[in-house]
Length: 106
Image 1 (cartoon, rainbow, N blue to C red):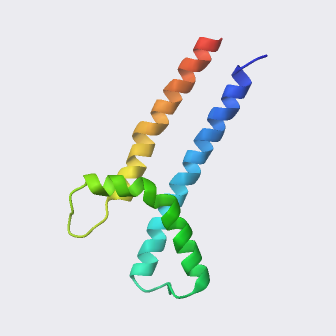
Image 2: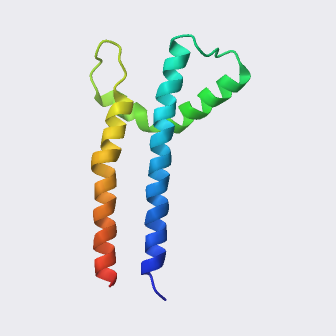
């Protein structure tokens, strides 16, 4: 059985999931701004459900980053740090791992 095509599918799925999570983090930031400036009403059930979903998706990853960052004028920089980590650490490392596995298989 060839492992190469299966490995490619798994890594492509992993890359797509990471891209989807990046969009979830960006959406959570935008939603947070809209709630903070009073554009969206948190008493609305749909808005609350979306906010709750985004909070549950992003908070487990953002909270440890918030704990490490210093408090800078009450600005939450943890989403920025997370997006930079995804873009410049996680994606290149996964690309290298995929490349090494493919060369090792061939």
